[in-house]
Image (tube, rainbow, N blue to C red; front, side, top):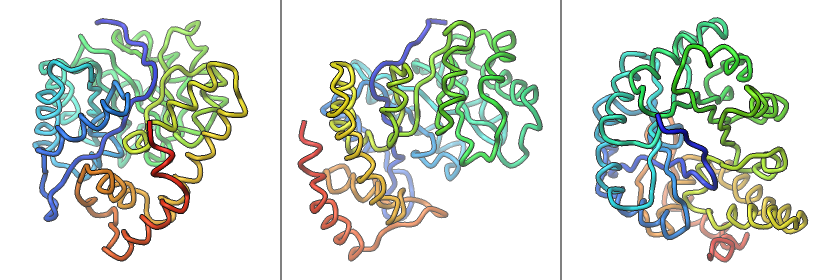
Length: 305
């Protein structure tokens, strides 16, 4: 396994659908081109933003195939989320990702029948990771959605002996105490990309080098500026840029984040289609109102590179 240390932005991409809800894989090429033009070099496919829990196994397989076709010969690197409530499905997706040449795989915990303790969580992740032994493996910590509250730093301490290809944790949690414990685990041996866009600056201050986020799809220039300002020691500018993210995400959340985010992508010329139930969508009037509010915020000026 080649070691991986993520730096910069990883866009957690949307899964594109036709109006009838079927996969629209032709749009992946536009997504990739848009992200490359925004300076994004990694994509995280089939995750939360990708509505993986609303996709069939065959659809997830097809999505991975299409992304790997599109990025061939480019600088974009693909990290495939393979987690599922069915561990056999997760293993299948991990094996496919390795066969197709993905950069890494990640998996969230089963969340219907939940692992009862850290040891059970390690068992689950070890089973998935072993299906792609040549790829770096990331545990996907997202307690807000899985309902799982086991310590991720305790996971690392136990998993290091069980998962030879363990690279680290995709840390989508606001628990910055645990974030620091994870970063320090094993003497700093693990990669811990941060997953809360609206507080990314906090993680940078604690040593983060990489971040995975959904708003990087449509607002990457804001986050590039946060990183640049932080690296030059201009905290005032970094805080100002981070607050643009806060305002943007608050607006989208107020309209129903998934549907509003997909509508925003359409406004930028990348029509990733509607969200699938149980996520909601904006009707034509709501989309027009969202565009008006985005213009009032200054969003379309904010994202000029």
